[in-house]
Image (tube, rainbow, N blue to C red; front, side, top):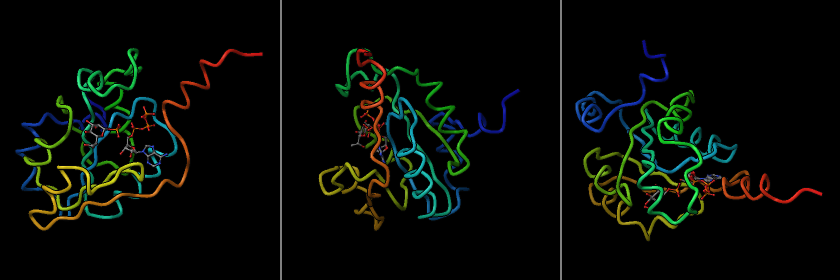
Length: 161
Ligand SMILES: Nc1ncnc2c1ncn2[C@@H]1O[C@H](COP(=O)(O)OP(=O)(O)OP(=O)(O)O)[C@@H](O)[C@H]1O
Ligand SMILES: O=P(O)(O)O[C@@H]1O[C@H]([C@H](O)CO)[C@@H](O)[C@H](O)[C@@H]1O
């Protein structure tokens, strides 16, 4: 039996079936979310307030390995990363994607609003141009808390003493 939050995790096919029933405006964001931190949860909570439902695309382990974050990344496997994102009250649906970018997923979902954190320039992202092409918005949410998974890893790996 799946817990309530595990039921938020959908395959791409299940998400496509559900799409017509999603409350608008649909907000979409994506990321690796390898070690969840305050910056992540703060930005996801703010993203949710921009619309009526929040869908989060989580990179598969194979796609993380394409991103050059480090040979040992991801630390947490995709099933665990998706479960933690799904457990957040501000997140409505979670879906995995296996490509270098979420472009194909965004094209299939057709969200009204695409969001990333303030470390991105939306004008440089092809998926932002795509969403703006059908009249949607592509926005960044400025960092409120300077945190990162890579910084956390450096901290725990720093020699003590
Ligand atoms: N401190 C933060 N505040 C707000 N949003 C953030 C913050 N860190 C990351 N994000 C956003 O969260 C999403 C996932 O980011 P990501 O998994 O790359 O986090 P990260 O901690 O920077 O990881 P890494 O250090 O591995 O690159 C992205 O959309 C990113 O813009
Ligand atoms: O967690 P990250 O590194 O912010 O996630 C990446 O974001 C990329 C961004 O959306 C630009 O397209 C994306 O391409 C990549 O697959 C990761 O999701």
